[in-house]
Length: 423
Image 1 (cartoon, rainbow, N blue to C red):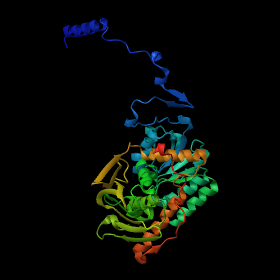
Image 2 (cartoon, rainbow, N blue to C red; image 1 turned 60 degrees about the vertical axis):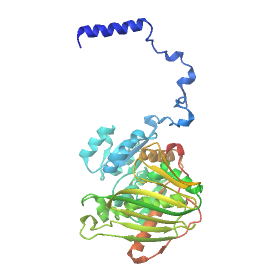
Image 3 (cartoon, one colour; image 1 turned 180 degrees about the vertical axis):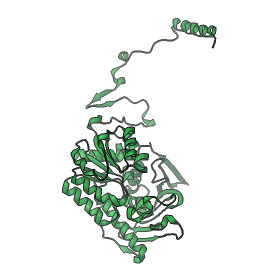
Image 4 (cartoon, one colour; image 1 turned 135 degrees about the horizontal axis):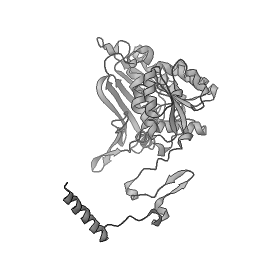
């Protein structure tokens, strides 16, 4: 731009200002106090920007950093790096204060990214030393399934609360051991069933329990993905405990249970283990199972490791159907509803404000630790799924229809429902 052009533009701007066409913004002091919001008990509130018809989000209002529950993340693989560590940024009540990993270089890199001090880096051999670190109040176990029980017990003995990824363990006996260890140490144990804290899934539960579309009759779910070449720990039975069933099939059977609130009285199962595919030398590919509930609701689930991604969940009732697709992923969860709207059939879709699912579940865990409240998904919830998966494998091995012990109350293995505002 030439100097002449600059002078021309600046001169024009000065002329406009002189003509009072450009005026300074009003000072904050001149605005009505109600428009500036207020602070009460350390929380900030602001007046709404939009009408009630537009909805709106509550302010995050996280705890001061020093007051957030200090968590040591145990295991820093894909799930930790892709979902859990970013989740801390959206969480209100937790912070990462330590990392436990067998790979020192990776631990150093992640610690630098998230502000974890080097003194709070541990490996699996010196894990017991966390008991002497008061910054660590709890651990989040994100290890291969076969290590969940060992590190839950070790954490409880070190005096730390435990949030453990699902599946809870690789056997019923291990799950029982985990519950006993935390109970003896008087520490909170919660299993990370992230979707039970998700707004879309809680809305689905509400629609089913209120019988908005009549009596529930059938639930169907598919959770499938196409896994990469062999070598992943999930394809090694000694580490995973099984294949698609405990990994992605668990989402289906857990959904059947929390939608109905009931426990199955009969279970069937079939699995496939394709010959010639090295991914399935030790674990199953497709798992298909059915659950029959006391109310007569029938549920059918399918999980697999060799199919294109498909994660859908649908409930059929007497007066309509409702479901989520995708249902079991980390984002873009959407609800669809079909029902009669005379003289036509109506099909509706609802979308939900995205929230990091791990932030929501970690915040619930922190609130339970701070208040002494039982988590919505305690160890007993994971134990019941272990029992059902054991029955599915028994049926798949030739056991036919496997009978399950009945339960006389709804949500028998769950604590109080989570705060709806946190979903």
